Image (cartoon, rainbow, N blue to C red):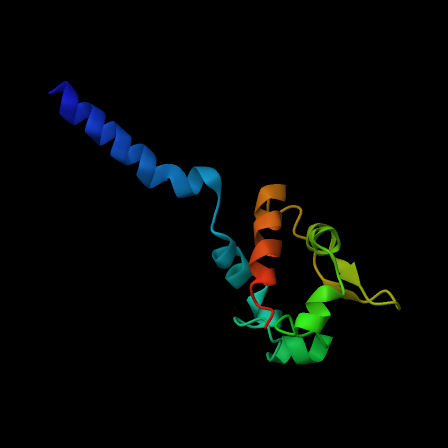
Length: 111
């Protein structure tokens, strides 16, 4: 009987793990980024064209910024030179670890 109770407890912990450790980076990207940057990162969305987002699949563009810069932009948001909000901050939506994971995920788009 104890064996089955232990197995039941272990499986419930494993099933709850995603909630405890946060959403997958791809899920967070889809939820918070894809509406502008597109599911593939190319930025070919209506919002992406309006905001003139950069193509995250462009390896040269990806080389133009560091992971730290991407982290800061995701966490704090970004504005154009004239003060127009281009990206809302994620600090209230994602943990630092989740933001780091999204940055790593974005890096996979470069061709």
